[in-house]
Image (cartoon, rainbow, N blue to C red; front, side):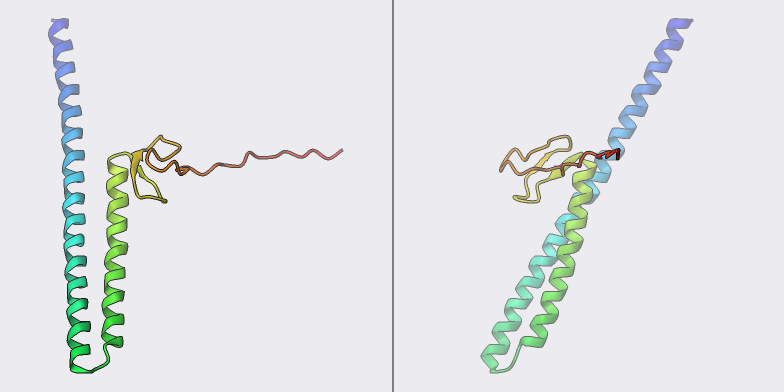
Length: 131
C-alpha cells in the first residue's frame, strides 16, 4: 500500500507543478497581449499625430498645441508599455539591458549582446575603527 501512496503523492506534486507552470504561462500570455495592444495604440497615435500635423500645416494653421497633447498621450502610453515589459521580463525571469534593450537571464551580470553591466556593484561596507 505504501507504493500506491507514493504514487499518489508523486502524482499530486506533478499536478501542482503543471498547474503552477500553466498559471505562469497564462500570466505571460496576458502580459504579451497587453504589450501588443499598447504597441498598436502607440502606432495609431503616431499615425494620428502625422495626419494632424499634415492637415494643419496644409491648411496654414498652427498645430503646436494639438501636437503637444498628442506627444503627451504617446509618452504616457510608452510609460505604460515599459511597465508591462518590465512585468513581462520579471515573469519570464529575465533582465532587460538598459543600454541596448536586449533580454538576458536574471542572474547574468553583463549583457550578452553589448557587454553592459546589468547589475549594480554594491559597495562593501567599510568598518573604520578609530584608534
